[in-house]
Length: 129
Image (tube, rainbow, N blue to C red; front, side):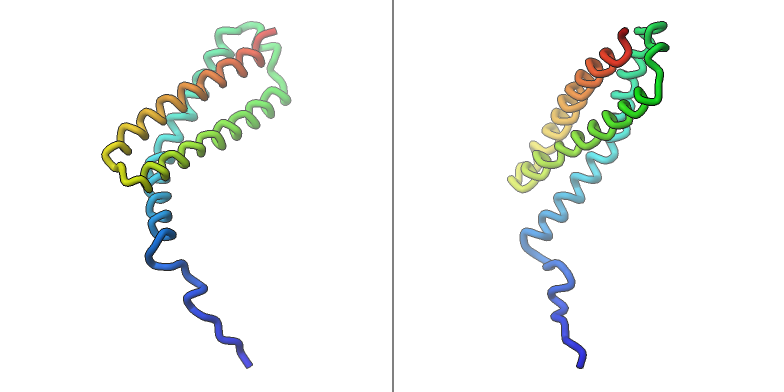
């Protein structure tokens, strides 16, 4: 005998908090993922700038371990970028749609500036001898 499975258990509810959350997450993804490239380019420019300004001493720092360290730090920077989703979704749940536009921009600018500052100090320490 085959066991009958309730079809409502196979799909998420069509309404309620789960569907609202899914919509808010989709909006946040559309906004933030388009800006992730800008964020990564800015951080890369900071690291490259520190490498160039520390030349010729930075040339001595080139090694496999340096590239592995930069890889780890770039992954961590992208994980930290995901922290922006929490306040974004919170503001969407609050219903303050008018504030969402400037809140996202301010959050992006402050978060990118903070990440660029951290990248500056890490890369400065990596390239100075």
